[in-house]
Image (cartoon, rainbow over all chains, first blue to last red; front, side, top):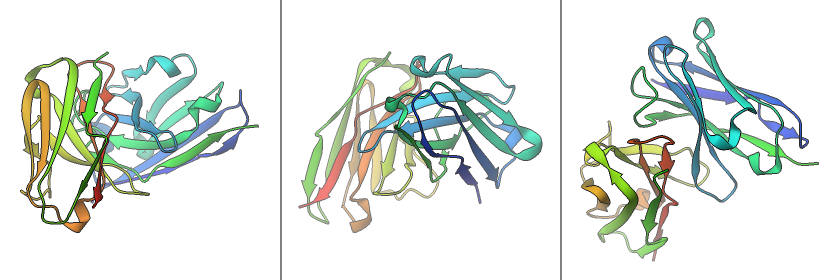
Length: 120
Length: 108
């Protein structure tokens, strides 16, 4: 059974940093691309960042230069380093699996999400 | 960026009725790289449909997708109690990947 378990969310002040983690099981992590998708309270879904099997990374324009996605295949874990956080980054962040090695395609499995709140 | 517009915003129906949800793209989504997701309150989204019309694993056949180009449809032939949720379309033809704003299917 595919499982994705996020952690690391919480309350942070504007301008602060946070690192999200996503530990996965039930599939061969190193073979698949992964992504982060976020959802602001009461709002829709928004793609944030992706990383391919070969470590190519992609970020949405609104997080470029502030967020960095990475992976540790030895730990079956995906990360999202978030710096210079803004109030508008407040959201539930979902870890998602992609159907293949590249970062195109759907989001075929989702974690339960971790809430990031940016507020003073 | 491809903008996806979903309609209606809210659909009020009774169990047993048919639901038809629309997703319109601002530019053509070639090769039908269009997916649908279902999200229930307090839960993560779940993939329902990929490639515009292919059901994901475990999705019942009362749920179907169709369309091409700029106009796509999700249909639920006979609404079950567990189908009342919010539905999102998503295109994966062009970067950045984008989602529609969602359609809420609520009990009338």
